[in-house]
Length: 177
Image (cartoon, rainbow, N blue to C red; front, side, top):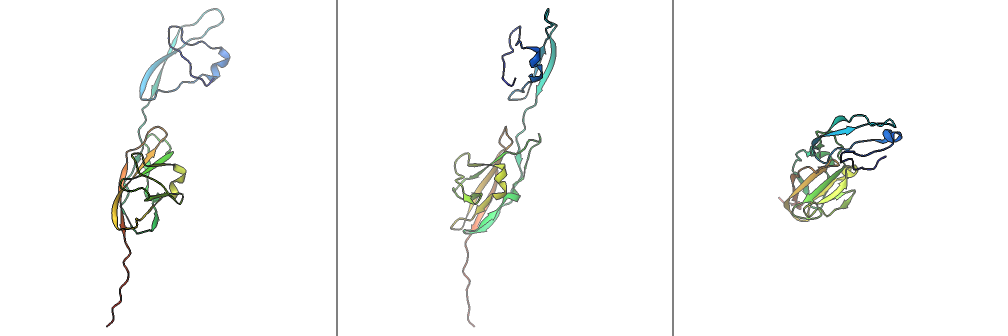
């Protein structure tokens, strides 16, 4: 009936036949194969145990493809959502993303707001907000390493790095001849 039960031991776990439609099995947290058994009772005697195998496939973490290095002017915001391509060989849906700034804190913007992407796990957001992911050039020229990771509901991908180069605006010059 949706609750985990302890079916270990020689007699397993007993339940009424009327609850058979609610019987389900759940895979292990990692890849495994286990033999499970079920038996029926007719009101007088128990039948023999019938074996079946439950195979749990290990989850494969998603992969974020390479992201091209970006160059932006100081203070300019650029949407990079189309550059982030995550795949999952298991066909799992990507549910979250993380972004990390290895040298600063506010180079990433999500839903129009600067996010603190420092620290070992960076900043986490729902996949539904990916279309709003942007980067913004710092106030001075320089290079930063930025990173993106994806989550499939079970595992995080490895970080995928790209370089953000900020260039400062150069004032025009006038020459008189």
